Length: 408
Image (cartoon, rainbow, N blue to C red):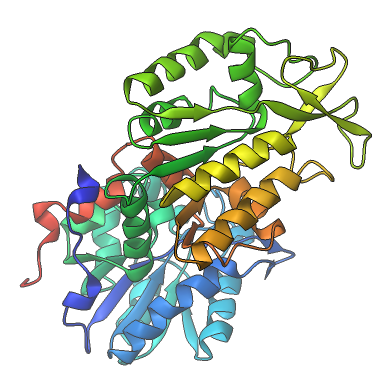
């Protein structure tokens, strides 16, 4: 497995006076040309600061939005460079292109400890095409390459894959932290291990569920996908969201879980309502008596107590997806309560907690525990593909023989 292979760490490289190209994921939300959420910039800034302190000339590469290979000022990284400059409290020079004369005019004139950012990689079709010629032009801007964008590593793009075969390449601290956290949770965990998997549909997480039941001791299923599993057992789920076409799939997951001695924990009671609206009248119903005109929007108190009991027996927790419609009051109560229980166990040193996915991060933030888990991933597709057991091209590229080019 690739996650068992040690990645080359940028800490091992001699970088003083050398130009380091750093692939970051600074695809941040924008509003009227201004960064509206700087979370990714704030989390990336320490990587740049550490390279500066070691005397490197730092050149940041990133994409923003989906310009589809054309230059679109709406997707310019110039505002992101300004935001990074403010976070670092140091000037960040900006190159109006990421390749060619405009880029090299910036990258080749940097002083040790200085920082530059080049324009959006996706202004060129060669980026998403993983084009070697485009990667070669990128490589002309530096001496060493660092991938610090785990969230972009599930795609074989020029700035994550092809470039590693053209210059000495290393993993950055954020990427290493992400790989370490996921490896600890999935490949070398302290047992017992529990996974919480929620969300709307079984069909979107078939590979995750199938992979996890071979890795964890307990699989706690919530959200809309729990309704599909309940329906697979023959329960009438009323007007609840579920997938009639996925009933056989749900049964196969349960068979695989039994084969691997993984206990699947499904709700035994649910919070149901007639209307999908904030503060809609709701009630708790056992799974055997869901009203035909109601829909399940959260797991019930008995199910929550059972889930907390599982966490208290475990040493490792992996979490992806909410247990209910957490965005709408009062249907986030179980998600928030379970998250707070997990955070408390983490603080007590009893549980290693790793969570990821957009909805998961939002739910943990709403629960007030986003900074109390052992690790919270900001990656989307890359996090999910790792949970599926897939090889991520950007990670695999760092382990290839071509990347071991320290002495070039």
